Length: 254
Image 1: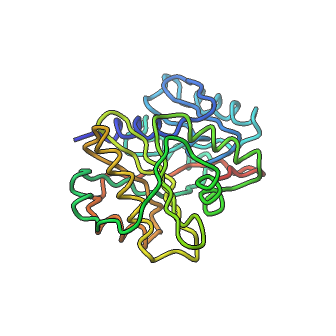
Image 2: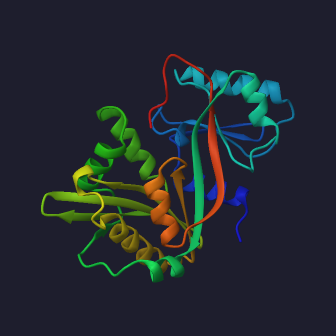
């Protein structure tokens, strides 16, 4: 089984920031404030001088007009980083569960799809429009940055339509034998009609065809409906992370 640190690396490779700067064992990710993951530090290993590293991180984010932000998982180093940041006034945000499953097991549990789902190797305008309408933050410039982030890894995109147009979308990113599920979004008036499960099946069928054997996804801890769906189809709790964000006048988008 994969370790928490290895899965952190898979998640980073699946959602690449526009800019990545190494700071003494940490990866400082910056993307104009678009999505928190792409604008946070991945603390891979403990720096020689913790205080100096934090100060440098703060400088790098302030250069971009962004609030300093750290992604804290069980693999974050040093182990006391979360408490150190809390003591410096960093606020806790975005408590998120990471769930994993065997691709074959999930596909066995998902119902057959009664309708076609379009799958492409790039996000088309309809796909991007629906995802951004449901989960996006900001205007045209932010949407352009988001498109760059989406294109930063090996991924493909599923779109399910209904009589009213694009109904649900999702993205899968492949890292070795692991497939990461991202950007699951359903048009508000089309929810609870099975569209999400159809998109998930299409993504995982494609991942299996490309050699994926295991899959992960991230769910905000208070999203009870999504957690219930993913547990029902075989995703088990594996890890979690949250962010530590320094209070600042401008907040990160996404």
